[in-house]
Image 1: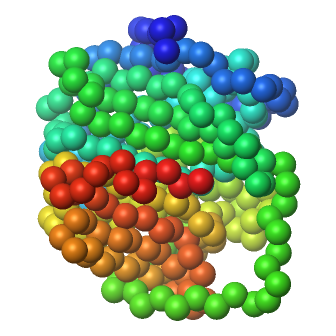
Image 2 (image 1 turned 60 degrees about the vertical axis):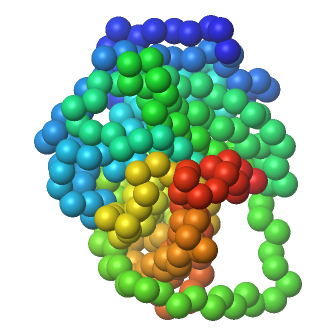
Length: 291
């Protein structure tokens, strides 16, 4: 991808949300360009606020999910541009994959890049990936791949009542305010996370938790037990309707990392399923796609 647009400052989120609310056009191809922003530094107060909302210990080491927040304004700029094929409102974030090559700290200065790729059919519509990278001194040290679904066909109903067996290792009470709290630290102010009225307009009984908050909360639960370099994949299943009580489970797999899951505490229905693979123990590309 040779078409690189270098930005002089971070895009402002407010105008992009207003543009997203008015967007109706549907296209057939992804923009063939990369947005890049150099000289990005971490604001420690913002990092601390993110850590508190997601359950991490306060410190200078960045959670593996934190560069996603740094790159979010660039992703928004790409996805709200006139040549992006789909309206932002209505896209469903269905999976995320993060590849961390080394521990990152608040002292690092980043170059962030974002592009879109792999527009592909899906049984319920169309999928695409938005790929973000963070580089330090010219070397890519972090890559995040967010998979989005443009829904054009309803989910097929199963023939009978599904049952789920799930044994949590921890139980989390997720308050209603987590949607707004995570929106404040991430910039992701999709109204399905912050407004009960607008969430209902999109078919939800209440506001829902961000998938990236759920993924971050899983990593926070394993803090101190994660390798220095790893790949974490997460498939976002049924939304967490707020407030909620959910169960978290993590199981170590043959010394190669962890399998993680979040389910509804009462029904056992799945909210997140994923794995963490140690780069020193297995192929980091194993299980990367969540199609």
